[in-house]
Image (cartoon, rainbow, N blue to C red; front, side):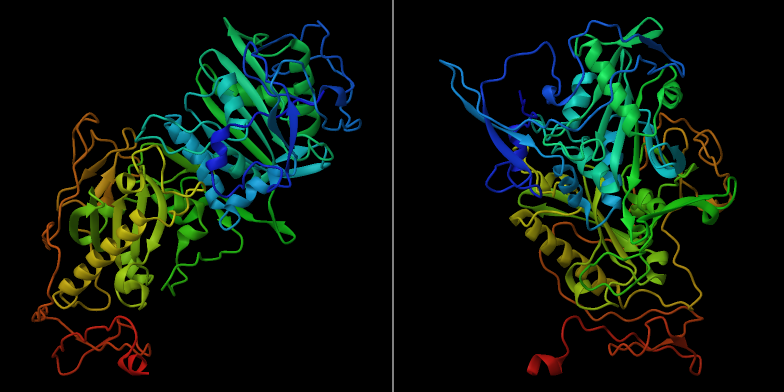
Length: 619
């Protein structure tokens, strides 16, 4: 008998995956089955006749301790892919028939296409899951491991967190195709669509193993394209254990001993994980909780892998720290951008530095800690703009960043529920000219605007962009107006300095390696002179981790929050005693940083024109 794979109806609303209907998705076939009877606990359905194994045997599977003996079970017959049953109609008298769907294994590959444009979006999905699990530590690394099936070493991507882990019901919910979207509003939660793990894992590689532990249980799940090759229906082996004192025994309340043995056999046969390696990884939990995700058969880029990884030097400078890179080094497309120096587009370490607006989780890439980059705390001439978009309060922090000016970057960083959705988004005049707004960075959290209040959100399911909606259009207009005001009001009034002068942030900040809060330094302290590991009790703060984090203050410039319009005023340029002449042009033959000295006198800046030239307008 063919049993359907459970699919929650709310997944029909998730874009990027197509409706789960036989007329629009070739990977899904409809079959008629009677209503599903209630079972003792949620579990996945399998094609029982397609396996030459007796699932009704009463042979004990055994128990496992926190040791390498975990997963040592008697052998069962080899798994075969023959004897595929055909879907058919099951009829019972006096029972209303219903339409369900089943999933073809090729649908796993389709899921991975959600992140086809940027592979780091797939890693971000797994990072989001760790944050939602209240993890305080996350490790991302790629190492090599021996594979018996590959007859050699293969790269293995591991993502390990110390969150609260998942029960059997929760890991089934994570591996099934979508689940009911949350009804309650959770401002700290990022996950919404129930597809992040599957789309992320299947984009990174063809096979993924999940090992998770709570205070009272441990589970193993195997999402694999290799296991399901040649099958008519998707099979996801899951083995769950429950704690009995210091021993983990097979949880027979959610599965039979024979089914657990059969699933574990499939995992060991189609993955590099034998009983000893599974036990070794399980020992990493000790008495704690967390989730470990291992992905192999990584995505290819030509004859090599899409990802490139470097271990780095321990104890060295940040330049020599390990990193995971996108091999193509391709810069993501953004309107108006000509700079090719956008490192977060191809460096995982750089992306993790800014992925969260308020970083509270320590993230390690290739074994070295990622130092968070507080964007709104690293700006010069900081301005805080407030306003309303569709009746909802928004707050934008604007300022100049020396590093971004040197790399000819600018734009707005948009966060949703504290997670970066769009980076370097050019708005207003930035779209029409490469030099307009150069070095100007904005930071804004748009959670209230992009959540409609009815649990629905205006964010793509891959969390790499916003949907085309009225709220987003009005937000873009507001951001463009505020960015143009900042540029117009301060372009001429900014004092000119020599080309080697640096624009330092308004305040210096340092992050505590324990509480992850940012502390403002006094003017006589330089963050470069502080130790690599700094804590709140150290100088110059000499305080407690319980002290609330200080808010970002405005710089020299003050802008009204209620202003609806503005008028450009001619402002006299101010120059230092050592000011230099600056010649600007919109023709592109000179850089706005070119400076020369002529008779020791300085000239005023020529305002850059936004949009098309007058000649083009007349034409």
